[in-house]
Image (cartoon, rainbow, N blue to C red; front, side, top):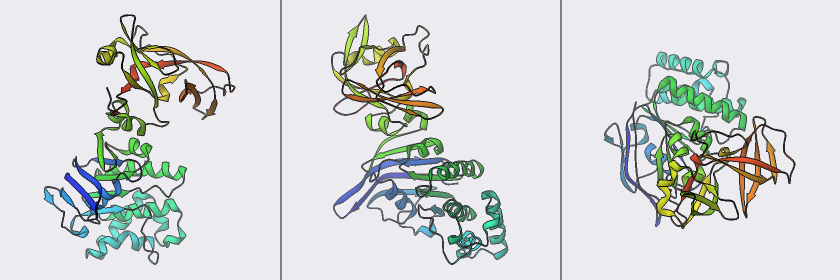
Length: 368
């Protein structure tokens, strides 16, 4: 297994700086996901760790050895690409064993590694086929198998599921999770898909514009986002954001979304927000906290308040239903338990679980 440390890492293309002095650490056996929108620098960072991009500034070390100037073959890594990168003229068997062959591994050892890998990935029946005879999901399993066969210290995944359809993405995501649980190899995974990040990662590095916004477990980024960007990027559907004000209310505080009703803040949160009374804020609430089920969040019921909304659009999903409505001029999404789709224009009484609310500074986006 590998211990990876990235210190003050910079990358420039001419005068254009795309990675701005980032720092993070990946512990032995950890599965870390670099996530962010297109152009945030996540693939560039991965390629610098792999040795496929030169480092403009800073330091990358693997197991306490600085590898900035090491060739990719000297870093003991295996990389899985988005486009599979299989050799079309070779069989699956030959593709799986190619990396070992290049390292002059004895033929018998290669055969054992290929057999073991094929059994793990359940692709034994594909060993004599060429890549053109495989489906997209099968090709991706072979690409992952080629990495596994080498038993490297560090696995790198560059958006490996992007070319698969929705069903295969779920299947391969589960396969990758299961493989990590089996091998416990240090892994760095790049994706723009927050669902992949949440389901796969031990920890997530959330990136924007070549800078790290937050590092933490999936639960930490979901429940304790440090700013507006992370709160909006993590979670599906995305968090609702409404311009609002904080006002005094019956010895406590209430948040008043523009064009909406007063929502009394639970006493457990009021102290935290006291310094922002009578100031503009951005009110954040997730769709799953705007629901038709009531919960006694604070035992005294103070964490849950009613809200009547008019249905604009209803999207039944089977297990639940998404309701699109408005507060003032702002569209909100609510996730309610499975019901027959309510009529457009009808009024629904929902419950807002304010123990899970967030407030953000409207200027800086920082969580208050």
